Every structure is written in structure tokens, then in C-alpha cells.
Image 1 (cartoon, helix red, strand yellow):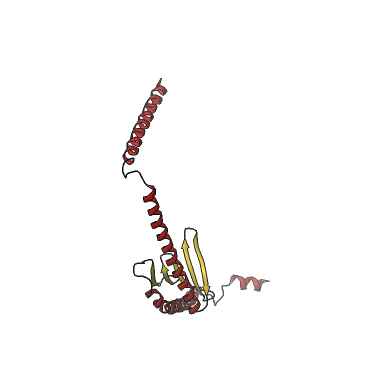
Image 2 (cartoon, rainbow, N blue to C red):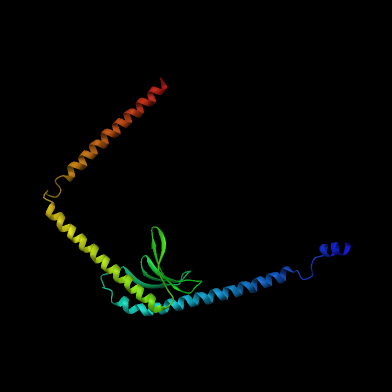
Length: 190
């Protein structure tokens, strides 16, 4: 019993802070090497995808400034397609992820393991966005034509009357509120 008590009370000879720090530094360096290798791999894979997409992006109409193929070495690295959509490489599986940011958060639109499948999906995405914008612009032009046909009142005839009426109502409301505040403060002192 005394021998076990002496063994417990005596510090282990192999315990050394200096040795633990050295091991921690080696572990940290190894982890950083692995992280750097992963990051370089992500950038290389996204660079391949970017090269595949350059011909597609060259065909986008010059007046359409929504699309910009930009490789950003962030963490994780991202290949931006437009203002809200980018491609990243999944750390676990190494798959390409087409991600869209929205007011509801991030949403993965598509996942693929090879460049060709992801390039095809991005091409479809860009095409759908161009068609959607054309449809919206056509709808705006059509609604503008309808408004011109329906609008028989000359421009500017009713606008000034509404502004004057709103001003008068505001002045009267403000005066009534001020009168009520003064009356309440005087009645409290009585």
C-alpha cells in the first residue's frame, strides 16, 4: 500500500511541459500542412471548372452585367457565378456544390462530383436566369404600354392637391396634439 502511495505522489518522469509544447507545435504544423493542401486542392478544382465555363460566359450578352465568373480564395474557396450564386467544394466528399444565397439563407441547388456535370448545370442556371430577366423586362414594357392607354388624366393635375391636403391634415393634427399636451400638463398642476 505504501508503494502505491509513493508512486502516486511521485511525478512521472516522462511528463515535461517543454516536450508537450514541442509535440503541440508538431501537431499544429501537420494540421496546417493538411489544411493548406486541402485549400490548394479546392482552388485547383475550382480553377478547372472556371476554365470549363469561360466559353459559356463569353457568350453572355454584353449588356447583361449580372454574371461574373470570379474565383475568390476565401474559406471555403468560391467560384462566383452571379451576385447570389457560387460554387464551392465540399470538404467531406470533395463534390462541387452550387449554392445560392437568399434572404432565407443558403441553399444548395446542385451537387456533382465531376466538372462536366457541374458546368452543364451552371450553363442551364445562367440560361434560365437570362430568360427570366427577358420575361420580366417584357412584362414591364407591356404594363407600361397598358398604363399609357389607361391613363387619361393629364400628368401632374392631381398630385399637388394630394400633397397640400396631406400638409394641412398634418398641421391640424400637430396643433391638436400640442394643445392636448399643454392642457394635460396644466390640469396636473391644478
